[in-house]
Length: 276
Image (cartoon, rainbow, N blue to C red; front, top):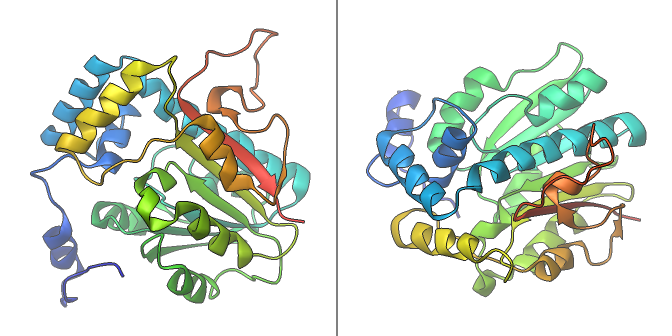
């Protein structure tokens, strides 16, 4: 279960008690790479060191964010999905899931799930909704499937298709925690017609500096990361109908304005699968 200290009457005090500013954190570093301001000096220092090991790392963050936008626009616009369960939200930036979805369909309902106290503090202020739709936020861990669905059911109708968003979050689930079983448990709770949108950094002989960056992170940051191959990432979609072009570099998943040239590959791979 999520380990939270006792709730105080002052929510801000309770949240601050859970924020560790002495150790870099992935959500804050990701925010730094995306040009955000919700980070600390320790995060910027670690982010710069990681970027020195792997200069292209900032492109992963941007590619992942653009992949989110294209996937959500497809699901809301072409498929007609009106419900999104975004687990591992991260710090709010531009074009969050609810903004993209409600731009297409204002009545869309979105539930964000994260267990980072800094994310929670910002989510309450920034993750708002259109009058026609609804946006909610759960302070919960990815592994607590029953709790997530129990609380999300107050906003989402799990009798209708849902888009499950797992962007850059399964990398925090170690191999000893049965990551494939965890994703399957989440998907099993969704009705037919639902979709899984998942992205994950990858390890590849063609990108050895990625592994060096991850090694540095696991020695200095939190939470720890587990790298997987592109084939390993594709396994998360077993049993689902994988949409074209399959599990590919996020920069190459249905790119817009490519003008015939294939975008440069990044070590963040993603895909979208449909539950029959």
